[in-house]
Length: 263
Ligand SMILES: Nc1ncnc2c1ncn2[C@@H]1O[C@H](COP(=O)(O)OP(=O)(O)OP(=O)(O)O)[C@@H](O)[C@H]1O
Ligand SMILES: O=C(O)C1=C[C@@H](O)[C@@H](O)[C@H](O)C1
Ligand SMILES: [Mg+2]
Image (tube, rainbow, N blue to C red; front, side, top):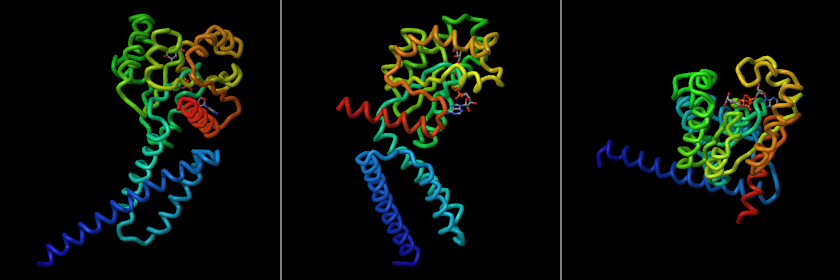
């Protein structure tokens, strides 16, 4: 065997070690999840992720391949999150609720914590139509827009492990709710009119709120919609005075409880 062949053999052995270590690491991830579940501990522990990163950085401080190894580890972390997400949610999570309830914010956080894909419905529709949502409404009317929402919700049924952040009005159409349910679990985020007002008062992006950007205006529209939102929801989570982490923790917990009931 010449030197080149020897090196190639060594490389193969290194790969075997990496595969074994990754398989072991993934099974430890599963054990950690089962432990947290058994002892009712929070699934999301962002401080732990930070600790892991700090430990890695310290260990790699003087390593010649620091950047390359860190890059690999970021991918390992992402895939560990995917394993968690697949174990926890074998379906899409559909977030509904009034403007400013926190659908996009919660989607972003969940997506970071579980490496799940996000479909921000308003954004996808606007991109596909090459038009802003207010322009779609004024050019083609609300029915046309709701048809696009229905179509997208149907399309998403062939995906899994995706967070679907719905437009604020999506759940108002019965057919949309039927299609949401076929995607997975529907989570309604709520907030008081005062909270919503505080959250949206400085933004001009929400055409439906133009002319009603006051606690009273928001409260009236919310009341008109409440019944339809609640009827669509599998789970309702109030977000008033809760951090984004707290809302996500509650959401994950409630989804897990739902699955336990459905076993
Ligand atoms: N739990 C929370 N605590 C504090 N601020 C929050 C919370 N959730 C959302 N926010 C803030 O409220 C604002 C509105 O949130 P977000 O855009 O996520 O709402 P949305 O439900 O997606 O609204 P829309 O239907 O208009 O898209 C954002 O500025 C966000 O940072
Ligand atoms: O609450 C609503 O009715 C809407 C909310 C936005 O997300 C958009 O989907 C659209 O402007 C309608
Ligand atoms: Mg949003």
